[in-house]
Length: 393
Image 1 (cartoon, helix red, strand yellow):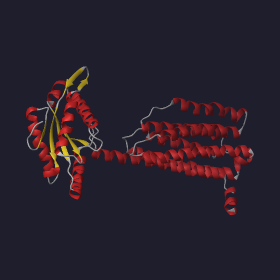
Image 2: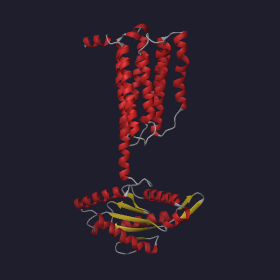
Image 3: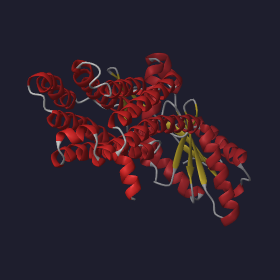
Image 4: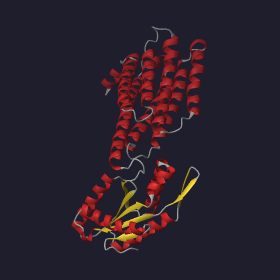
């Protein structure tokens, strides 16, 4: 343990800072590369540029004593705080949230205003460290809060990881400021154990932050691709492919437990005239509203999908034919009682529903044919519910 402490005290602070700068520049290049391949989300390129400015700022600070203070102190710290500000903007844009310009103002203004004075008029290194630490902490705390609030299941875990790293960054900055209150300024500037440990921790945190951001973007992309495969892009309910998988799983469950389930094949009556008279935009709105009305009327265990065009297929687990017909009638009445509005126009709609049941069906194709046959009978009178024994409610 003593040997490790001696080794740490012999590490040159400027060398560690140089390594941090180089590492951050490499990480910014990785994020930039990711932004060139993934263009679906906002904020990725902004994060890369922010990381780049932060890395350049760290590099410039290592030339203190070689280059002028304008470059190594003022410009370096300006770039660091501007880089963190861009990272905050990137996170907000990525999450689709409004940018709080008040946070940017209170974190950037003190650095911009005070650093020339604290460098040339009153040269106070500890106070500069406190100011840049507080301002950076505000930005990182804002990032952490935004990410901790993420509830999307698709990338919630990576967002939590990134938020935790941002919070860790804040703790590191606090410890750095605390070390300056405990140790003499000159010793803190060049060589002391606490500062070296803080810089090494910052090195690890900067790496983990960049990798966490890359992971979050990748995880969100993976979630989006999975969503495209199973969710209808217009109505945001399950699509035909997802419903087919659910029906197959339900038939497998029926084979194991000897239970039954039912399906409702729903068709919007007279939908084509809506498109012809009011346009396809009105038609899309009607489909979305019908989908949501049906979904909100169903039980928690039921699943609705867009089967194709103006047709919806609903899966009713553990439901008899009679109970399914009752549910279908409730859906029919709910749509009939609603009015749909668009651009100053309003329309009344009705639906026809065909009921199928797994009792006499041996697979997905058979239960669909059963529901489709019932729907064909319901469409004769429209605004009705029918099942596969050709009765009409």
